[in-house]
Amino acid sequence: MYAESTEFVVVVNKNNTINALSKREVIDIYMGRYSTFPDGEISKPLDLPAKSAFKNDFYLKLVNKDEQQINAYWARLLFSGRGKPPTPSASLEDALNKIAASPFAIGYIPLSHVTDTVKVVYTFD
Image (cartoon, rainbow, N blue to C red; front, side, top):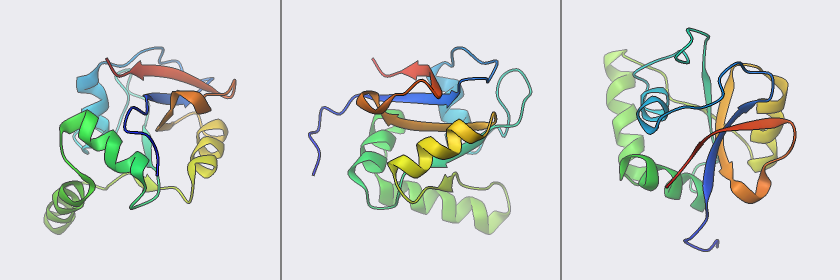
């Protein structure tokens, strides 16, 4: 698959007014605690495809949970009616296209895939 040292960045549409997010803000958006960016605009988080190395590695870096643990977390929240998981993308390219097309989209991608259609708002240390 992919090397374990994949460097992820969190990106938004290049026209989004947000220029930076803290790790806490990224966690709050991706774990369903907030459905908006810090400025109050709606956020629409995107996930990479299920069972992709990228998705698993992202959540391990973000909240120290693997994809199976994240799926269990969302199953509990969905059952209790307290949240909606990030929208799955069909591929990395699909995620980039959705982010480029929506000022509300937020996603995580390998640093090597950043294009001029997106803006990096968080980089892992």
